[in-house]
Length: 542
Ligand code: AMP
Image (cartoon, rainbow, N blue to C red):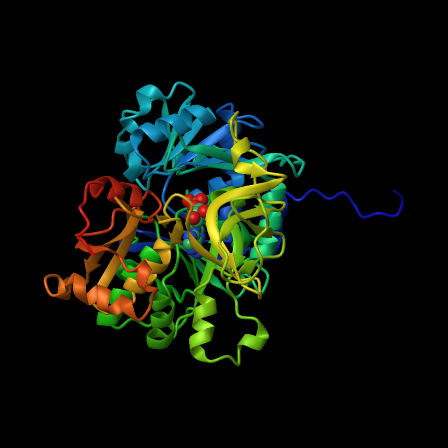
């Protein structure tokens, strides 16, 4: 039709060129050993150009997949832009998956070249004989290295030898693939998610909105969430788009490393899964670090316990922003900001809202659907499966003939069970498969865990369903005491604590103490392992 707007492609080249023109002096810093590697957006741009030349010389063409097997570093950021901006596909490999899964993923995606961090060489070397599609390995090292991978080249050497001239960046249609990531599914093989340029750009816009994560040029952003986990929640893309200062922790993810980075680098936005921040919290309870630079800590991947949100706010003055998303959603779906009329609510009610996963961000639509396929009311009570749609949500899995069960009338079925309150805030009650189905009623393991983790003697807790002769399933609480209370915490204390906090029939039938909660490759509680371990657990008669 006449008189419409330009057909301007939303692609990552736009983000890259913008950053290069506007923020050449802005810093990107990475922790390397005990020092910091620092350079500017201008240096970054120069190296991104060189990397694109290098990939051409290795025969990487449009649409070819290039794997990265790496920590969060400036080199990984270079790959984040050079690969998609030259028309190829960035495939971030989850270094913490089982070897079998990594082999499956690389072969399924048919990666042509893999960029690998020197410290991760031993992991990849063991698999190399089973990766027929990989034609070249590029080793990202700070100095000399040795490897059995063949053929291989040094990233730094290749960059040094590459032409210094500007790369002729192609015009990329917005619906072309830019990146891919496999979901760490708990059953079956991992499934591939292919992100379009358009999806990533629109997601970046949304992520930078003030009521979302709200990144700005004035921020110093530290993605602690791995760059192989849903593009570090899109932060490297959105931070580059708005020209934030960026800090990458490399492999240094211990609480003390993070506390030092926040203090020394004056981080304003630090993002990661709850496990990371629980660990940091316990350090900060004992030792003093100045974390006052923090403006917001986006937390997602699994439920942020209310006690943690409250603890950070009241004891440390740091604001946790609870968000929910999925690899299939680029990944942000909801963010829990208070609406203006809630600012005068009693503190207790405000924390109750902030502990929910929040409202849909602009660009995402959501609904809850019950067992009969009917939409659930927004009453904060009735549970249903969360379904979503929007421009950065997958339409199908990559080369997966049987993905139709994950979709319903154009909506993506998340597999998460939620309630939605009258204000539109969702609360993740559970994964469908983790719910305890007790006598036809559902018990939320997430809710129980969050309550138990509020007990002052508890470090971590996971609740699982175990079979029960009368009720089909009943909850079992697996609790890790804080080190100081290792042998000084009883199951009865946990139950007593819960009695005033949850419905009587929700009370776990038993409490067991464990050394630690097993974690998945991206730091979530791995309840599959606990279910296996306690599958024959005999519950006491209650
Ligand atoms: P992944 O794609 O690995 O990030 O996993 C996505 C899943 O993580 C979601 O379907 C949820 O089950 C879970 N998840 C993500 N964020 C949250 C959150 N804030 N609270 C509870 N569960 C979450």
